[in-house]
Image (cartoon, rainbow, N blue to C red; front, side, top):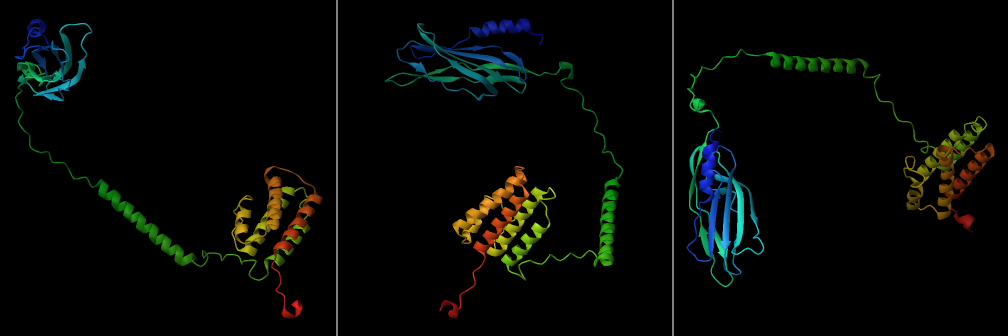
Amino acid sequence: MGRLPALIALLAIAAGAALAADEPGARVTLDLGATEASVGDPIALRLSIEVAAEGAEPERRALGPRLGPFAVVDEAWSEPEPGRTPRRWVWEGRLAAFRTGRLALPAVTLRVLRPGAEPLTLATEPRSIEILSVLDPAEADPALAEIKPPVSLPADYGVLAAAAAVVAGLLAAALLLWWLVRRYGARLAAVPPPDDPFRRIAPDAWIYAELQKLLERRLAEQGQVDRFFAELSRIVKLYLAGRFRVALLERTTEEVPAWLRQSGVAAESLAAIEDLLASCDRVKFARHWPGAEDCREAVERAYRIVDATKPRPAATASGAA
């Protein structure tokens, strides 16, 4: 700042400035780090409280966030030194001001708490600190330039033209789509879904025919054992789904028994179904390669499951007799 000698002299004067309280046995001393600073510069502030009365101590409260026009930052109390008489507590912090001029630091009031007696009130003297501008004195009051009239900018229609082009493109696309629907609508009609295989025949009759077709394809003799067991698993799940009206094609082998149990399938049949589907999974996922005889044995197991789960014909009166 160019005023270092003056600051050192002021620091020496401020270090000894203090005000003793009127009450006996306690006094407070204020040490100010500087009496002149720039805007925003930190100014050290130190308060020392000496207490001679036994058991008495100052009320260690926060003095911030403001002391008059000054902001208080980094404040903290320190404990007295052991064995020192009289005991002394120290508050230290930093002040900062953000406007220029001679600013008044108000008196700081503190209380000393005494056991069994009224608190003592200590106060410092008001002080003043000169806050200087960070601008060069030659530039502190620059002459104001004459205000110029507003500048007229030419109109920019680029955004409007781009928006109009986008709208025109959307309209053209809509017209093209309408023409395509009019021209090729009949060809783009949705294909009707395949008929439900169980609408015309019973599920047990359907699976018997499907198992026979699977055997006739001779996938095991062609080395396509994994495809054989994948088809067998699909056929069995589709039969069970049609027989008990539950969706099983997307269910795992572990989930199938729980869904069938809710439909009233017997425990013996559930065990046989889970065992057959697990055998198919071992071929599909574990790459277990059984022989042709194993394929025929798996189809026989599927036949037994169908025989155990297909509907029983109702007994007529004459048959019962």
